[in-house]
Amino acid sequence: MVQDYYLGVDGGGSNTRALVADAKGNIITCRTGLGINFYAAGMEKSRENLHDLVHKLEECIDIRRLKGAFFGNAAIDHLMGDDEAAAYKSGILDCKVSVHSDAFIALSGHTLGTPGCLVISGTGSVAVAKNSQEQYRQFGGWGYLLGDEGSAYDIAIKAYRAVVHFFDGIGEATMLVDRVVQKYDLQEPYTLLETINPRLSKREIAAFSQEVKECAEKGDAVALKILEQSARYLAELAAAAASFAGVSTVGIYGSVLLNDRFVREHFEKLFARHIPGGIVVEPQLPPMGGAVLLAMAEDGIAANKEIIDNLLQGIATIK
Image (cartoon, rainbow, N blue to C red):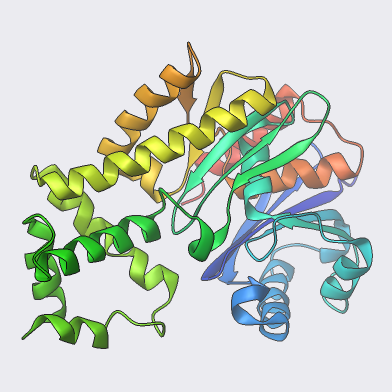
């Protein structure tokens, strides 16, 4: 019997990952392409990159066997309307396509269809949750102008501000000053304005968070304070999401929470204070795996142990 295929897509601004599995969760193929975030790249470029990605899939599978697809797209924070989704996939895919946020598919990879919550802290920050009534809610995610506290971008901006405060004589001495001077070869403080300006992307600014992490590891008080503030905000966000979902476990995702030991340790302690017995875990499936489960669910296939085990085993072999 010929098995139907389901496509899960994790669409970011820089790159996109596509995972194809059969109805039992066996991985058929995984391919990577350019970003499909149409907020950042524009709709025309997003569709062009999606077309190229689908062409890569066609080299591996009979695309006509796709029964359904679910996309996570960093450009939105809600379920795209059917007409919008149809227009987006027009001329590229013939199967049913649903499009929601990248946070939504990441949550699916953590909860595997059950109530739960997830906190993401990468370039930006957000928490998402689903309760037993299938109600979905987002916490945070207000963007870099109104929010994104606890994110790599926020960490970097706070570090730059600490440096200029030192230059102005109103801030503490910090290793971050030397890091900024060396990184941008500053001859005098105000030349920093030539580099840190609106032309830089959020991702480029966020990259300086790595310098903050390294300074914190060396005991710099200012860097440690910045990271502690990040952990505190993320823990409060997680507690709000967990209360909505009615759970005591929170999933974590994103470079800050997964790769910064100091932030993660403080986050775990603070979350347990907000939610007694609170536990912090990493999602079982990556976002593209969560998207596959959602594509199956749209076709009436509920996640079961066989499907999840097959996805886990297959994804573990993907580099």
